[in-house]
Image (cartoon, rainbow, N blue to C red):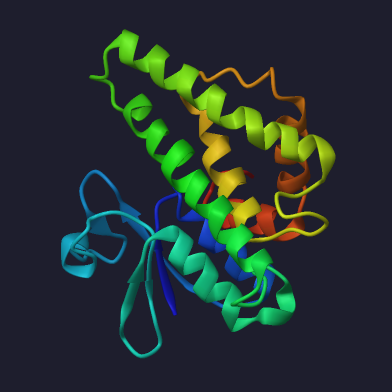
Length: 202
């Protein structure tokens, strides 16, 4: 399988999940601005949506959307515990967490990366993000991981998205449990391996 990624983008989440599950992936870096892959392909021809992540399956099919990709990868190695079994309430809790991160956090960051975004919009989006981080901080004050006592795909996604805060000057100092969570995830060997591979750490 091949993962199309951009360093530090939301594609870091499935990269982490694959490494945590012990699933070998071929990596293909994508220039998000030029829409070209490292090997020179027009990325629009690879993924008509134009963004990462995209996962080329062994049968040639393309799977897109981070929350779908991390669940697919986790289900290939159920013993990894990265996603609870299908049909169980814990699985719906995973989907609940992935959906919340996707809609309330991930997309709210998007305008903060655009230089043309007006200052007042920037501040409104930052305020919104802090409101949406508050319930997650409350959960992480009670337990180490979003779903309880072990690391799952939802934690990989939250870590990836929250890493963006420092790039957009979002102050998260009011969320000590969230910041402690970020440090816990960053210390995981497979997370470090993914970040090293993407050139995010040395």
